[in-house]
Amino acid sequence: MPLTLYGIPNCDTVKKARNWLDANQQDYRFHDFRKDGLSEEDLTLWCDALGWEQVLNKRSTSWRALDAVDKEDLNQTKAIKLMLASPTLVKRPVLAKDDQFKTGFKDADYQVFFGL
Image (cartoon, rainbow, N blue to C red; front, side, top):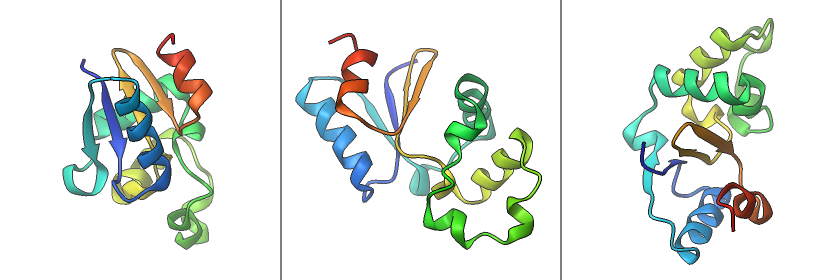
């Protein structure tokens, strides 16, 4: 699997991650959640690897806009359904490299992830 960065282009954290990847000469493909969509298969892979609690962004404005009923009794299946319906609920960016996944962006974490 090639290196893929998932997110939305106007997200500041995604911009920081893209700038870091470019500055560190990492060849990657950008996958725009809004334009290219998200698959249940990808979300399941991420949730299985990282835990759905790490993938679902409960700090987002999309989360705050949800009905209280949608926020109750969460589990992985329900979280994936919510993220499929509203991809902006996914913590951004998601970095996929081989069978490794990472959410969010911190310079030091990316250095460790890439072994730099």
